[in-house]
Image (tube, rainbow, N blue to C red; front, side, top):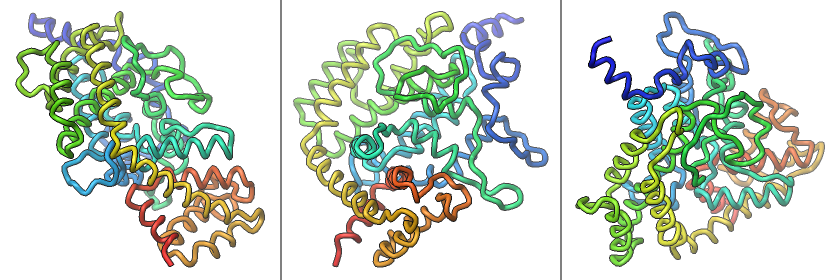
Length: 407
């Protein structure tokens, strides 16, 4: 091995851990629920195929009209959920390429990690979770909803034109349900055993099965901290004194940074530090200074952005819309006659009729091809209703609400 090759090998500290053919866990990671057809002369890897299947599904397309932080913004330059997903993908790819992990796997996890996110960001998630706890005695959380979306809801046509579920690999599905980026944890290691992913009961209960999944978990946080600040500045949410406070937080570590609140500066510094400090022995980690810096920026964002009065005021409107839609559709439940009740109840509302009636027909055991829900059972009907609401875009939820209240 040449000196240059040895240097490159040394830089890629995780090269022997990468989820590639030859890894002891590759067969598990690349396994699928169902046998997967292969196109003639397909040149893609297993994880690259997953990436493309996510890219072409409707749930991914809807992310462009789902809130990241600021609701239903009319400003074209404000981040939506789809841009956040691409940021997480970019950060994950960069880190994996540098330290020697499989960037195709990380990119697929990143692209799919928020497919089941509710409209109106985390506030929408809280409201749907409250309804789920009240009516079903179980919590709703977008990581598990995303797994359900890729396993049972989203479909693509096969080579014969028949709709089939996405049928993603275990490693991508695992990375999706294990991606929770809200945890303040430094030094993340993959878990050693493959588990039934439907036994996961809460966010961050388990670390991902792969190192690549661990990278996405951290990349999620790296991606949103700086971008949320940039949007807050663009919308005038932060005052000059708050900007000065943020600058002082960041310049304690980077005194010579000219524009310390710029997204790319924040992301760059965290990415470099993560690559320098991560290793198979120490996990995916920052040094202590950067770990504390990230937590301080996150604390600043919560105090000054996520709990801003403009967002708090809109939260009440979000609750009104979701509760109104839920209540109306819940009243349509009628046991054995629910399917007909839904058709009759939605008929006066063209947009609602076009999607909820279709949703019930498509996914109910009574008449659908996918048979995810038994709408004659009240709990299953409520489950279907909450899933339907969770997959709306902000704008669509607003249109349906306005349609319902209009005379």
